[in-house]
Length: 423
Image 1: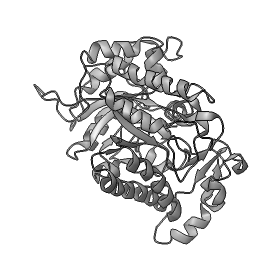
Image 2 (image 1 turned 90 degrees about the vertical axis):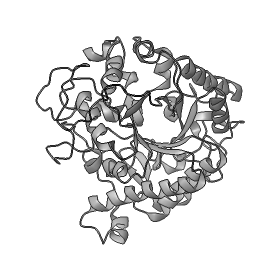
Image 3 (image 1 turned 30 degrees about the horizontal axis):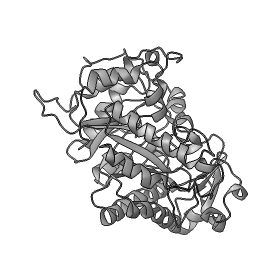
């Protein structure tokens, strides 16, 4: 952030933006006995045990999770990856979400984009093996689903095109690229960009029997104070039918989601399409359909990502809102966000999994709730009151392994007594 490159990078959006949110009225911390709001879906008296998704994210960007550093031998990279899959099995998880296109690059032999720099340290250098192909086969051998995690528009965590591989499409097509907030992005307003990023992702889906295609929270980038995302020329050429630039940008993102959904159905019908957005669509002081939150950012207005619409239109098969706040958070309470998403997916057939901030669980955390190893277990227990919640996904793999304050072990002991199939 999602992902700030999804929770460290990657972590900052959910955490830092929420920390800077305009605080609403403080609420008492809630545990399993939270009073339900009118209209919340009722918990069944004796629910049948549904398939439960128990996942973990494996982030490759900046070597957040894997590989542990660049330049390792192929054997060492492979051993580390297999070790993470083995840990998922030991924790009684049943799915891994592996980041295979972290920054307009590839963790498979793509004909369209260079090998990722996070493997060898040099973008475009062949690592000597096929990480995605190995991961799919090894996950399936262990009874795990493998969801391939792609970032559609991020090109680089810097603004120097000359640092990209000579063959990089962003160097060959500089008009596709926008520098913003110290990073490079493909411009979502260009139809040729949307076609290309779909082609790049579709290549992996066609090659490998992945169980899912997964996107995180990066569409248009998170806002940077004092900077404008320079898409003036694209808006002038393509935005004439829209009342505002914001509407045009949202339509661009909608188009990418809808078209990728259609392509995935054609290429690999058995694979599911899922997205893991920042968890606040809009606050209800802006839109009565929004959540009773006061987060400083919402996907609809700030990322031009109408996440609610994607569910209602059923363009996606599952959604994993990054609910990276504790129960009782004053401006983005977990106990408000989960019921809002349960109401949103109700009746759509879209599965709801909750993204959990395992990375925050640490005895040295500055937040008392996250120092408590029982906080995450309370999340899972709270979510059981909402039948629409079909599982949880934990960020990230290295915390699943290290488990600094024992929160993951507590979740497993309290909620995952036996292995279960994901669906």
